[in-house]
Image (cartoon, rainbow, N blue to C red; front, side):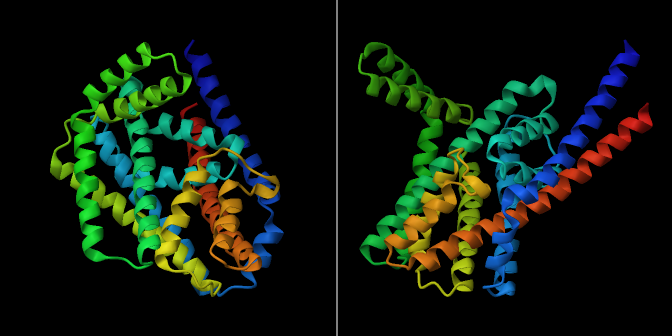
Length: 331
């Protein structure tokens, strides 16, 4: 039995290495390398390098938020290890049909067998928080654009305070809302209302796990998310500057929010393009920006994702080779 287990571990490590190598080879054909190189010839490379560095640095902020959620569930993971794993995840995320493989691998590497339920809760709450915060910031940038197309510092501070209090209330009263939604769902016959109550119950059930968050902890969590959001928005602004596109920081705020929400749709078009890239063209042209510049903006964002995914592939390949070598030594 011991020999069989050892053999199976070696076989699994070998198959994983073959799988990663195959993905790396397919990556260049899947991504449409010709289009990436073509768009890079039309922009300032220093600006693009800055945009790429900003995109890669966001992994650190996203990792800190997840690290924070995991610690609350008493799952201790070295922060640097979490950052490296999240960098590798960018590689899998580039392949829409295979992106779930990266999520499963990350979960398997981070979460011990005896903490599976807690790990699922942490990952679920992290994703819910990400979406809710993204929608909240998108609404803020949208209203700011409609009113004056410039940032009002006092209004921004008031909005953040309201958002922090709303998050605190969501954590505190999540159990009550979950129970209320379940009761409403059972007593109604409307399919639309049943769906609304079910989604509401799932949302607050994710938050209920973190009802012990103090106001200071919520403030830290919100601060991390806000800093990440602003840095990500800065990355979009740098891409626009690289192409000399006349778009305000505020307009980029709501455009970015809608694009990232669209990215949650698991649809990829030929050449690796996804809903995010298509939505970039639609949203930019709605502001009166020419179709050619809008397409260039979309392609440059795609090129940035390409190189971030390539870095993730290198990291993932290194991790897999190391795991394969360790299995060979232990044989």
